[in-house]
Length: 178
Image (tube, rainbow, N blue to C red):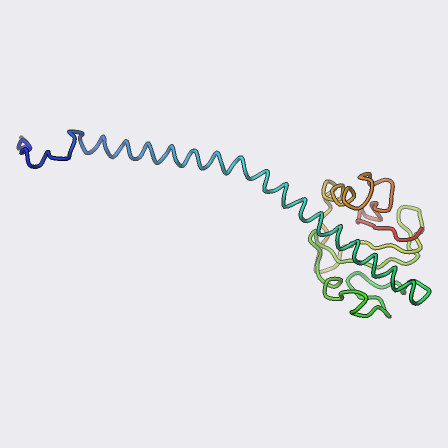
């Protein structure tokens, strides 16, 4: 039989058995964890959408900057640079004209930037275009929704028309001259 509690031990305490007090703390903790889980579940899709838009904006910006560099080079020299493999800076382009480190790095969607001069894409020959293509060490992620976001930032939002289209093997293609 348990000894009765003395009045000095009851000061500032309620008569709740320890087991019930522990359960109430556990229930409260579980409610807090559930609320945090619901908040995270609600915020995650928003965060992913923001990330996708940021990647698309970065790619669109790179296309604009590189297109300006190639067009300036053409105006200064009178012709487009020669064709090169993906990720390789075209001969005659200087680091002042084209930020070579940005050109040579893997893009936000994989693959490397590729200078296309006089190449065929889906049955059409383009005089000058920029593309992002697969390379051995950087596979390109084929994501049509991402390509549409890039197209909305650069062009008309339609991958079938305008200057931004899908090239051979569904690579993104930014046409500088038809």
